[in-house]
Image (tube, rainbow, N blue to C red; front, side, top):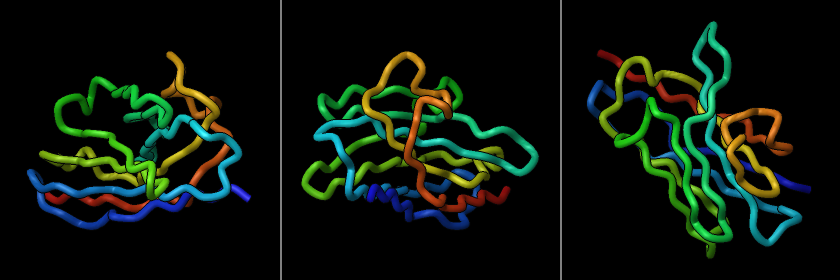
Length: 125
């Protein structure tokens, strides 16, 4: 059974940082794509970053380039999202998701077939 478990969310002031973690278990592939999505109240879920664990290729939404960094620790089956210079508009529930591989459609929800339960990030001004 595939499980993706997020952690590391919290409440920070604008300009602060957090490191979100996505721990995967039971995944049926040796290498796979892990995407990070976020959903703010009243808004659609959007993709913010993705990484292919087989080669380390990374993908970012324009809105987070230069502030967010996605990385992996294969020994721990964990993907991280370092979020820096946080803004109030980054407030959202952050989810990680798994897909067999990354592609130009990494930012689409329907690309992924496994999802975690989410971790809340709240940024105050």
